[in-house]
Length: 390
Image (tube, one colour):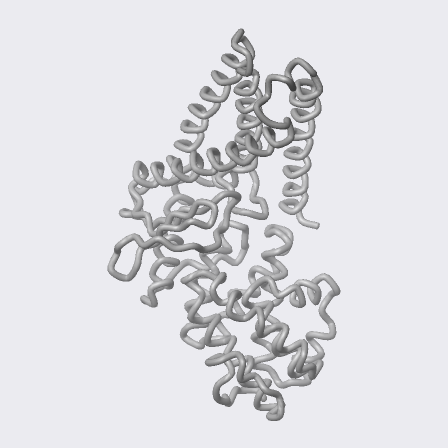
């Protein structure tokens, strides 16, 4: 278990402990008081649930609007803004369009590109949300004070609402500002990184490269890091997927190997995804028996990650493993059921390479098992391919 994974469990434990502490220490005594219960407009549990929902929605909106405003202050162009799956995204003509999509973050995600690599400053995207949250805290405290001190019957409801909303907000922002990478993107992971001007420039270069890749443009040469961290792996991924788009698989494998060798400095998911990437490409390129032995020698946790089909490389690897090594039509189709969503969720900068390689993986299976029917998967199942090493 890696340090970042441990941190993730610690944060969730702290969030759960905080919620339970406030629930039993501050809210429950109010809800079991007969005088207070008689003043509530609805059952106490319902009131708390509505307050939790309201507090979560408000805090999510405050956080993501803070990212949006911070991007403007820091001199970035906003390419997409997502809050709880509601997304405004620029189309090819540069106009914002409403859509619904997933995101990498606790409550949403704001994707930007720098207007100037040297001058654009990402720090406001961290600190503006905190300033807005301070206003939310003041609002909740005012509600609590008014509700607690008012002599008007029923105003205790406002106190409970303010307390629950404040708790929800503190949990969300506590997660977001925690100073370590977690399982979802959080601002706290970048606080120390952005104190270094070299890192800021590298971050801006990553954003530019990812944006160009997403639009099918040439990203040019990008720096490749042999010692990989959760920050530099993004820049390496840009170079790796550029190599994949150019069908320079040896270069892609070389870059991917840096992540595998940096196992102690990346989180477990990043490492396992790199293993899946290597396995998928090796099954595609190497002589079959050699690739088969490589799969057999994988550790149990590595095989489980591939079988969970949570990323594009994992899906590709499982298609080839199930179709060529295990020769299971059913398992291959289980992987294919995840193919479309894996391509979509890989991100615009990786989509073209993932879609092409996904098709090539299935073509290899179809070539070996001509009696298997994959017509239900549309374009992904068309044609055959001739691959090297097979």
